[in-house]
Image 1 (cartoon, rainbow, N blue to C red):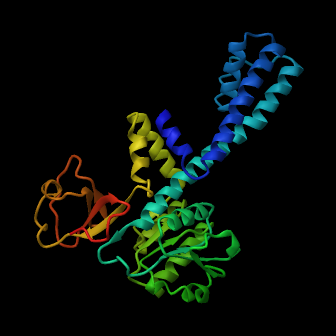
Image 2 (image 1 turned 30 degrees about the horizontal axis):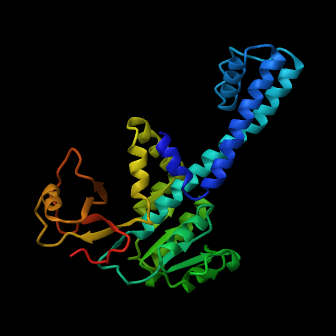
Image 3 (image 1 turned 180 degrees about the vertical axis):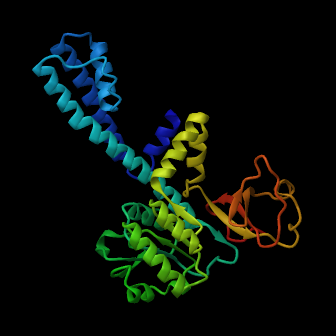
Length: 324
């Protein structure tokens, strides 16, 4: 768990998270000591009370009994609880940025050099995503109504309302290799996805959305990759509780500065073979296969590859686009 927290602190906004967590610890310690002095209880009891208050557990076994301790309780609640909420929100944002960046790096041999990455909308996670794509030397076009001086210089901006068909058309989505819809409003995400399907029916789409009805509607449109920051952080933390280093492993897969995830259609030589057999024949790290829109890692099953399936590889960042 500590390793997971350490890696999360190295994600975008890690410094802000560290400052918030440091402030929370300071408030909890000072509040616990002050509470023990004013309510005449041991320091350990005061610290216990401060932790249960800051985490909103509130068992009720330790409560303030005089005006001074009630004032301290009010201050602790009004400071630590919002700061903890902000810290976890930044955690979710950091993991979202990493995951979206990884999705935008998924490129097959057929897509190498075919076009740019199109990002539509300015979600709170978008600036961090653009920075990561710029570091990875990806050609990116952003469609949003934002100040161009606040963007990485490698990003080409099509300034305007992303839900305006004329603005979206001027970005030439039919020339893009992959598009991510990342508007701040789920309704706008759905509108943009519909327009992109009309303007570029073959364009691979990813989207950032939280509303379940919108997620279902996007999948009906053929958007297979729909990301939710809240779900991602929940999954990562849950896996880290199952196994101490599971969360660290998941974050390592998202570290785009060290490696990429590439896609390759299953060729005639691999069709009909089980995934385990192809893994033994390849020098690259074969992560899994996409068949029928479902990703299989080959854990607990050994799917037989078919023409039309897609293999997922993990390769070093400086590796070429071809897997053969």
